[in-house]
Image 1 (cartoon, rainbow, N blue to C red):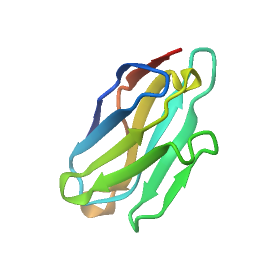
Image 2: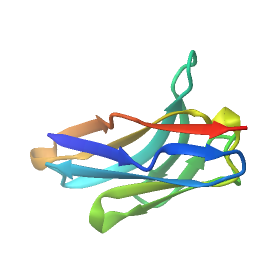
Image 3: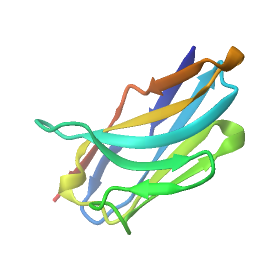
Length: 120
């Protein structure tokens, strides 16, 4: 079983910055991809940024140039540096990680979410 825990959300003024962190723990042999998703009130969950095992990154158009995803392989952790935040970035941010456990079992784990509120 794999657990994913996020931290770093909070309240920030427009134009400010926040850094989200996410650590995976448990029966992890390898992590194939990690990512951040968000869900604003009344909207569907959407992809924010992902990073693959090989280091390839992908960003939603709305955050390109403002957000940066990075990882620490040794710590099974992924981070999201968010700069130039806008009120429309307000959402619950969820961390996701996918990988393999012992005996080749695949796993896909989500965190509980962390709230980011950007005031205008």
